[in-house]
Image 1 (cartoon, one colour):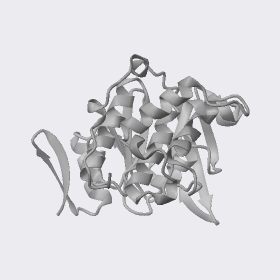
Image 2: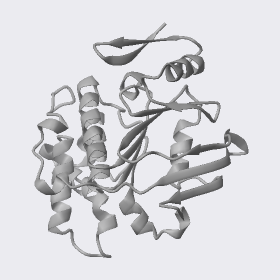
Image 3: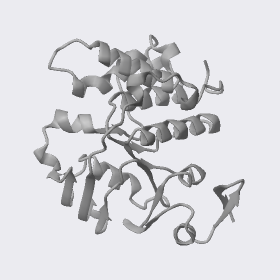
Image 4: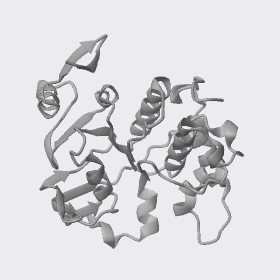
Length: 276
């Protein structure tokens, strides 16, 4: 199957009874005073606490600090401030237990090119496995479910290095989904995906939210971001607005940070952004 081939949406993928169980999203909160990279201050004081059972999309112009903020929330970048999970400091959580609660899909992630797609997706189950223990039946079921959702199951035996950019991205998404975490953080998850596959990604996110998860994504695709529950608008290292996509104040904030070069319109009940 090539990237142009249409694959079924999450709504068309059979769901086992165990897959519909409610997920508990732990509360995740960052109170950041500053974050600097190579001596340059990238993020200014801000607070973000993604809501459970909701999809939060972080948007803004290039260089606004979106990806840096998301990496700070995952504990991948040091900063001045606090990061808590269920009210406990991030560093107080054992790494494996933390990884069961918070799954991460980074931008341009790499993996061993000779690993099969199945083995890459199975990496998402490592937080659930005892040291050196073989994968359990539950692990195999979770991986099959995740790869079926992203329609990457058909090339499960192919090396990652043999896949196209879009196929690779869908395998990496399956790895994040296989964690079955309460919080799912994704930085530019739509890279290499064409519009139909982007639509399918939205359905997958909606399914995770319906099951109780908190999803946070950094997106450049404003028309996809406008389908989220909450938009966090960033500019110059600050959160300048946080609110629902349909709110006039959110539209005004988007137009400000993009220098009034957007038209935000409602078409057939959906908000879209066009170049002005």
